[in-house]
Amino acid sequence: MTSGYPLREGRKRHVSMADVARRAGVSAQTVSRVSNGYQGVVPQTRELVLKAMDELGYRPNSAARALKLGSFHTIGVITFSLETLGNHRTIQAISAAAAGAGYAVTLIPVDLPTHGGVEHAFGRLEELAVDAVAVIVEVHLLDRAKVVLPRGVPTVVVDSDAGDAYTVVDTDQADGARQATRHLLELGHRSVRHLAGPESSYAAQRRVDGWRDTLLEAGCEAKEVVRGDWSAESGYEAGRILVADTECTAVFCANDQMALGLYRAAAEAGRRIPEDLSVVGFDDSADTPAYSPPLTTIHQDFAEVGRRGVAAILEQLRTGEQKPGTSIVPTRFVQRASTAAPRAGS
Image (cartoon, rainbow, N blue to C red; front, side):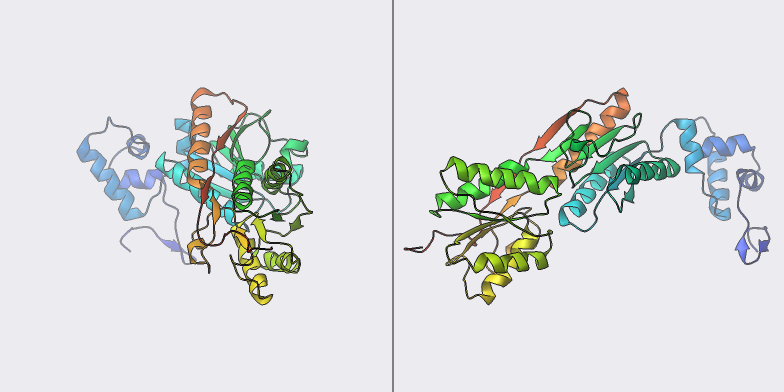
């Protein structure tokens, strides 16, 4: 065997710092200095140590090294749902921003959005050794004091009304809904129906508020919302109710996936988009230009949410202080081909 170390029960013996020191012919202290990036090591000695590490397959204990250096360079992400496109894109954005700052991301999903579930997640993150936490909260929790995040851990909350207690980064949900509703009214639709997200969702409620306020300000009736669960299938089931209403000429959908389901319901009912029914989505997901017709929607800047969230975390790590308050990321209206003026007489 090239390593010179015996195998036991088919497994290689754990390689220690002392093993590397013997192979390189140096002290364990020198191996430690190389492992921790200490610059005061003679280049030839450093090369000997690195070569020995490579030959033996030695990997430094990053947790122990982090304890010495005071940082793990890892951000924990707690999320209550991995099923929605918005959460996936938010996690991706945080990961990209963290990587750009030299940090890794550890993901901890929480099955039940309860205080116990959050405490368990924070406990897991402590075991996994992280410097800070980003909490992606889709449901109404922090704003109703159902969940209290542990103190002493640099924390940023995404997608929740928790500005009085925590650092929050969020998309301007209500303004996005206002832009969508205003566009349909300006086209001449006398009212706009809303295919909303789950009642428990903070983001969904903010979109309902923006839609309703815009209608009422325009002197239009805000009929009862029809709800889905963010999925295309739920959009189809809710869409069947909406397209059965012959007076319905325009629908604002709380996300693009449910709009896709509405497309199917409209097609089955023989209602053409946009000739018979105008549709606006929310998110601006990557495949919306491929909808038939391409979907008019509201663009969420997930990348900016990720950048601001990580920047807030790094600021907390630098200063040791959390600054409660909410940073709002603007939305943007994206015009495509799924909306038009209502037909004469509609």
